[in-house]
Image (tube, rainbow, N blue to C red; front, side):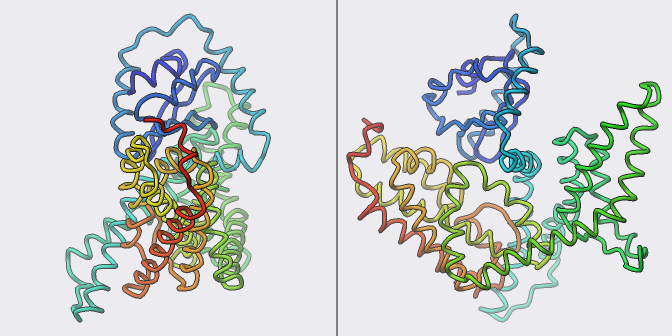
Length: 457
C-alpha cells in the first residue's frame, strides 16, 4: 500500500515531508500536479483523499501508522531525486497554495490544525488515563460505597494523566513556533512563560499576574508574535552574531510584552470564548445542542472541526469541563446509526464489507472511515446521519453532559464524562438517541438500493 501511494504521489522528488494522525497519512507535496489523484483513490485500503495544505490520504486508525512506517522506509531507500527543478516548483506551488488560501478563515483553521493535530495521540492517551482515574473512584463510591481516592495506583494514574495538561502550554508553544516559522525551542519556553508559577508574585499596573491566564489563547498569541519578531530581527542582525543576538532580543521582548499586554488580552479573549459557548447552551438549550450536533459531520468532512481544538481546551481550562465536545461527539454516533441501517437494507456485498470494516472504529469514535467510505459517497445517508446526530446533541444538552478532557468520541468517551454515574447515564441517553435516530431516519428516508451503483460486487 505504501509503495502504491508513494508512486502515485510522484515519488521522492515530489515529497517535501510526511506525517500521520489518527486516520490519515499527510504528505506535503512539492508539485500537486504530479499526483495521480484518480488512481490514488482506487488504491485498496485507501478510504478517501483530501486536498488541503497537505495531501491527506485517509487509511484508518492503526493501519495508517504501519503504512507511514513503510512509507518512510521507501523514502529512505529511494536515491532517485529525478531531474525536476524542485526549488522552482516549490516556489511556484507555494504561491499557488497562498492563492488557494485567500479565505482567511480557512487559512487560520489550517494553521490551528497544524499546531494541534500532532498532539492528538497525547491528548487521547492523557485524557483516557485521567478519565479512568476519576471515573473508577466515582463509580465505586456511588455503587458500593468504597472510597479509593487516596489509593496509590489511582494517585499515580492521576499524575500520569495530568502531565500533558500541566505542560500543554509548552507543547503548544513548540508546535506554534514550527507553524509560524519561529525557533521551536523558543516557542516552547514562550509557552512556559504563561504557566510559570513564579509570576504569581508580580503585580503590573496594580493587577497581580495569574499563572495560566488566557490559557492556550495566550500561548498562541505570544508564540505567533515571537515568531514574527524573530524573523524580522534576524533580517537585520549580522550572520556571525545571529545565534547570540536574535534569540536573546526576541525572547526578552516577547517575555515583557507577554506579561504586560498579551496575557491580559488573552485572558479577556478566553473568558469571552467561554462565556459565548456557555451562553449559547444556557439560552439555546436543546436547540443549540441540535445545531452543534447536526453540523459536526460537515465540519469533519471539510476539516474545519480542527478549529475547535483551542475552544475545547479553553473551556476545560476555564470551567473544568467541556460541554461542547460531548455534543459534537454525537456526529459519529448518528453516522453509526445510519451505517447500521444501510447494512440492514443493502444487498450489495461490497457495501456490506465496507460498513463491516468501518463500524468497529465508528463505535469507538473514529468516524472518518464511515464518512468517506460510506455516507458521503451515498449522499442522502450523510444528511440523515446529521439529523440523528442533531437529536443526540439535543439530548446531551438537555442532560448538561460534559467531559473532563478531549479525546476520541463515541463509546471511548465514557471514561472522560464528568459527574460520575449521573453524567454517564446522560451521555448513554445521547449516544442511544443518536444511534436510534440515525438508524430510523436513514432506514425510512435516507437510503435505497439505487444509490449503490459505485459499490457493484
